[in-house]
Length: 466
RNA sequence: GGCUGCGUAGCAAAAUGGUUAUGCAGUGGCCUGCAAAGCCAUCUACAGCGGUUCGAUUCCGCUCGCAGCCUCCA
Image (tube, rainbow, N blue to C red; front, side, top):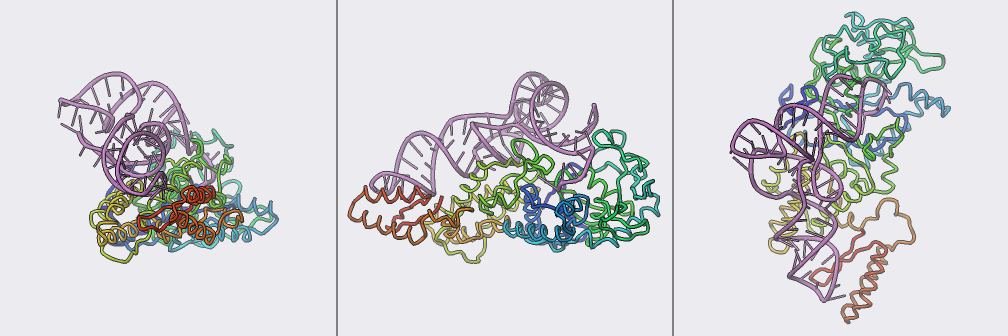
């Protein structure tokens, strides 16, 4: 029985889909004017894991994640670069997809773009104006009249009187109420624009998600996700727009993931303390990054540091080591571990506990290796199958363990696999003639290059890279 | 100022009203020529103060500390 923490009620609730067996999930994606950073990676990995687990649980899932490909920052950046905005967005959409593939994030079922949803956006704004929830401001922009929507503040737990608009930002005098937000923004000269009943312009940020989610999933759907910082005002505004326009309940379960932090501070573009996914992948393997993200609960803060990434790499190595040398075939899974794993995931996607089950599994696997090959094969199959729900442990164990760390690939100073095999043979010869000093010096030489040798009881030697 | 959330052993990170989290690190063993890997055992906890309770790390209150939102941000 899957339980999901619902931001709207601030409680874990039993998940019941609107339509039995089917789930619609919408996640707010990226604004594509720059490379994805680790915070974006967390959203991608977390909701990819949710999607994988939903499907594993037997739901027919429609997973939609939008792309914001028109907004102020995009226009600004394109102008800086002296390029048309579509050239900029196409480049960063491709970069985003590269990052996702690296992190084993499966593509969402639909990836709507704001620039391709203009008709739906206009229709929704029209409906809002018709219902008296939106108005054209003194500067021609269309605004949402926040006080006209009774439920405003329900998601973020704020009430209008407490919100001190203008405290941190200049109040826009074109609005009737400082908290009103823009639905349609009139274009200045040389800005990208679409025609609308209110003149040439572009959509405000919040309206695109209301329009795209509703178009892809219907007026009322199951899950809406995104980063915690979107809770207010973005998601609050989405509710006001969608429920205002359709008159129907919008979303049943709101999911928000926690931030990635650096030195106890939110990683963000405005603070400038972010690492892009590709920077991180220069130094750490993608699977290690994914494992790191899933090693804490999705709602907890995740403190980014090299040390923590290294620890994640060591932990993942333990799992891969347990699978090494085993032939893994499809076979019925060990029920005990499967149930424990599912109980963890059913509890609001508790990947930290799910991973601990994988370690318990690895321990038993290591124990049965010598004594019970049949049991071992079953445990190995179970480990790999459960791990696949987290998107980890799918590489060949030996390849993983022998693989170079990211960024070392073309370094001439490291030994090739042939060099290593030759040195291992030399050392075995030395061992056979009991030349321990020579054997040890070869081992030390390899160790200095990050190659660790492991002698098996049967006289063979395997190796891995640290 | 308003509203959220969090504070767990050396580090990271979960659960839980009474019983082993888990990973890394430490200590002692087994294994090994010695190692590594693996296995076994073991030491470090629940911010502080009150309350509820037979019993609280777990529930409630207060205090302190940290983070986030109230502007764009995942």
